[in-house]
Image (cartoon, rainbow, N blue to C red; front, side, top):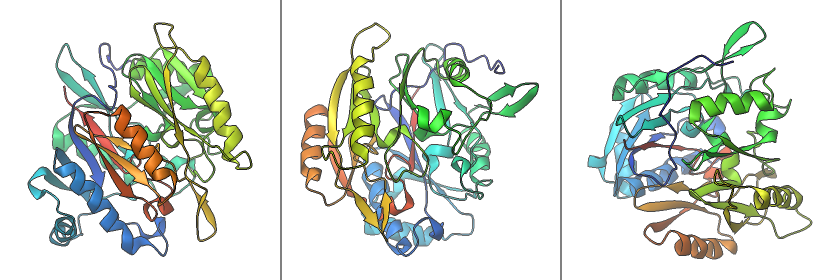
Length: 356
């Protein structure tokens, strides 16, 4: 089913493990934020600035963009420029979580490689060819070997389509994914690949054995079911998951159903996970369109947690929950009311690179 990459001993680590850097792509596609793009560079700069005070940021910029001008925006948010490496690479969009490298580590050999999954614009958008080539450049820049997974459908070999926001791992053999994203005929990533095939492929690539299939993602999510809007590992045995309290909201049954699946889920040792309920913000609309506002699209860094906020009554509630769990990390809230108009938030626009 899948080409042998000799990845034995390699695995994807939990996001909370030590990181070398965070990769970010500077925003440039105005079509992703129609009418609101002027606010987006500032939001990106806030996020980059917060990270740069504690660890390295690898920032991808379009070759024809002025790095001098970008630095001015960053300095206005008090960024630590000495902690930011600029890389001139062409891209279509800024959502590097979905087209960027998926890093794997072999701790015994002290080696790091990355998976270069095919990106096809979430099987929805046509302008993705530049995004799909970004990892070729990254591999050359950081001198890390990349592997390009293939699948065999019938007698035809194809590149395996997969996105970083579609799954989450705990680094101990468990993975969170949704049926809506991977098994639906809508925005179908890999036609002909069934549930058992996905499990075999991902088991080989990510060194996971325990598959937790949730059903659906939230309303407004144009990726059709990404996990990083609804459910995240925050430690090997702890899962934060979105809950909607309003029974009339379209997300109520979706998230309750997912929660019921999680209650029955076990880790590789056969024990239940510790579940932390994260309330949803009120339904959020921009230009009469519902957007996927969720607190679960956060980013774990070495010393901070970047948490999306929406000027909602639940902002303070969620900050309190995060402070209680992440006792050794600072919780940095980021106003994502404009950013979410691109149908993604902090996790979507970042990609963490683990340390060996």
